[in-house]
Every structure is written in C-alpha cells, then in structure tokens.
Amino acid sequence: MQQRLLDAAPHDIQESLVQDRRGRLARPLDRSERVQAWPFALTLALVAVALPVAVESERAFSWPTLLAIGLLYVVSTGIEFEVGSGSAVPSELALVPALFLLPAPLVPVTVAVALLIGDAPGLVRGRLHPERAATTVAYAWYSVPPAIAMLVAGEPAPLAQDVPALALLLVVLLSVQFAGDLASTLLGERIAHGVRPQALIGPMLWVFLVDCMLAPVGLLAAIVAFHEPATVLLLLPLMVLIAVFARERTNRISGVLELSSAYRGTALLLGDVIEADDWYTGSHSRDVVELTIAVCDELGVDDRTRQQAELVALLHDVGKIAVPNEIITKPGALTPAERAVIETHTVEGQRLLHRVGGALREIGDIVRACHERWDGKGYPDGTAGQAIPLIARIVCCCDAFNAMTTDRPYRRALTLAVAVEELEKNSGTQFDPAVVDALVRCVRAGSVDHAIESRRRAA
Image (tube, rainbow, N blue to C red):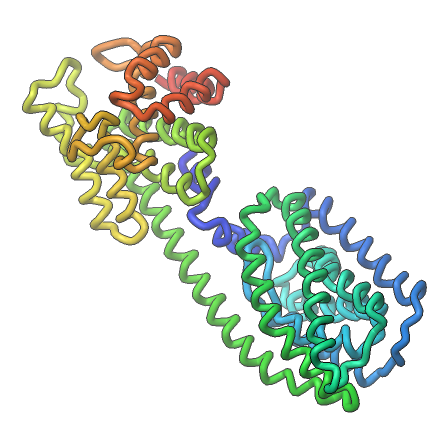
C-alpha cells in the first residue's frame, strides 16, 4: 500500500519517466505501447516509402552524401540525453545537412534506417528488445514535416551567398519540425504510458532549445559540404564532445535516482517503525495517506506537492515514537501534563526527519505544522491561516476526519454524516475552509468510502 502510493506521483515526473524507461527497454512492448508504436511506425514506413515514389526531387542523388549523412545519424543515435520517458539525441547535426543536401523525399527513410542501424548494438547486447524497433521507426516521424516543408520551399542549394535566406528557411524547418514532434510525442506518450501533456512540456522545450543551438552548426556544415560531401564528417568530433556531456548527465541522473530511492525507502522504513511501535498510529497514518491523496487530487495540486503530501501524511505522527506508550494508548482523557507531552510529537517528528536530512528535512518542517489550526490556536507555534503550509492544512483535516471515523478504546467511531458535520462546524476555525470543502466533496462522491470500510473490517 505505502509503496504504491509513494510511487504514484514522484517528486519529479521526469525522474520517474527516466527510471521507468530504463526498466522497460529490454522488455517487449506492453499492450498500450503497441497501440501507440505500431500504428505510428507503420504509417511512418508508408510515408517514407511513398514520398520518394510520389514526389520527384529537384536535387541529384549522391551516394557519398547519403553515406556521410547516414554515418552521422548512426553515430548520433548512440548519444542519448535522457529526457522524460524517452531520450534526446543531437540529431540536428545530421538532420539539417540531410535536409539541405539529400533529395528531400529521401530524408524520412534515411532517418528511419539510420536509427535502426544505430540501435543494432543495443539489440545485440540485449539492452533493447527487438520489438522496440517499432518505437525507433515511429520516432523518425519528426523528420517528415521539415522534409515536406523543404519540398514546398523548392529545395534551395546551401550556398554561402544565400545565408540570410537559408537562415530564414532553417527557422521555418525547425518550427514545423518542433510542432510535429511535440504533437506526436504528447499523443504517443499519452497513449503508451498515460503521461499527461503538461508533464512533458518542460523536457520537450529543453530538447527544442538544444536543437536550436545545434541547427545552425548543421546548416554551416551543409554549406561547406555542398561541393565536398565528406567534409560533413568534420561534425564527428563535436558529436564526441556531446557524447561526453550525455554520459555525465546519465551518471548524474543515476545518482539522483539512487538518492531518491533511498529517501523513499527511509520514509517507508519509518512508517513501518511507527506501526511496529503502535498498531493504531501506523494504521491511522496509512489511512490519512489515502485521504490526503484524495483531497490533493480534488484540489488539483501539482505533482511535487502531491508527493510531499503523501510523505507528510505517512510520517505526520512519526514523533510519537518519543512519547510513552502509556500516554498514547491511554483509554481515557489525558491530563494537562499528558496532553503537553503528546503535543511535543510534532517537534520530535521534525527533529527526527531533520536528522535524516536531504529531502526529508523539508518534510519534517511540514510535519511540525500538522497540528496548527486555521485560527492560530494550534500547536506548537500558533501559526494561523495561509501561513500554515498547504500540505499541513490538508493532513490536519484528514487526520481529524480519520480519527473521528475510527473506533477508539474510549468511544465508538462517528458515522460519516456526523464526521462531515463536525468538519463543517469547525471550518474556518480549526480547519482551512477550502480543504474542508474538498474533503467533504470526496466523502460525498464516495472517494474515501473504500478506505474507511477496509479499516473497519480490519479492526
């Protein structure tokens, strides 16, 4: 349960997508991936074959040019910048010369074949499943819009005296390439992996920025290679340099993934420690996680806030480890002295999470505020209103609702209707009104019934 919830919305969606991609490359396509990959690949193959048959190019075909550009493409496929659920390669260093030197109708098929050849080492080593070739061919779709745009432009020769006009044409080619690439990627990732478009916009813009930086270099190479095709291979040293940067990025991402996994593992371990120390507190924390997720989704918070909220909900009572069990399990009302002791658990929780450090340090600061009240009469700091972190306000409300709907030694659980009435009665005093409204909507929509019924059966 805890692992599923914590993995559902990672701190960084891009980080999660990269990790998922690494794990699936050696596996065959799953059903949703096939639904995306094969139609994209087959239509690309159809277009790539039909285009040179249906459209006559004004440019003369040259084997040396084709082989030189093909070699550039094959080399570029081995240079991967991991971004989102895929990877970016410095393809503009090969695509721009291809657009300006090859017959435009041949560009898509050249790209597709070069990408497949570039994947051969991964297939041989078992790092890439053969069925993944469909996604490789589908990826070549990005070359179709600029090839068509080049045909429409009349396939001008890359002459040095025409640099201003060529630069303008390059801008047009990049624009149609980016538009087509963005549309196909967002649609494809939605179909194959259920990735929301907004999660990919940032990584895609980063890729497009890199492409914009490399495209002028590719144009310069095309101008130089117009009369001597082999000179386009002078781009290879630049590709090697980019490969070094790509490897450093891969290593850095690996380090981030390992550290993130360690933080999540620590959080889960602490959750298990809570439950081992006191079954009710541990079970209660897991239930609060489910309620918190429902409210976060109802409020439409961003992915990072949602992930942090899950961790805070899981660990909001971790400080009770430092509170004597006879106080936590006392069947009757607490004395003022006992109440003062138990109210230290938020500060103890913050202290414990600060000792863990890293990402859990920020979680500890929010845990400290989980018993503050909207009217400023909570503890430990008497913070009020919007000054209380949103996550703490959400967890506070879900914590109280869960406590009200749970059997305790000194009272029976309240019905949902009575618990909702208590929430609404304390809205604007103990609880944030917006959070109360969101939780009540979840309750009335049935979003939390399953968790509550499961808990009652377990009890």
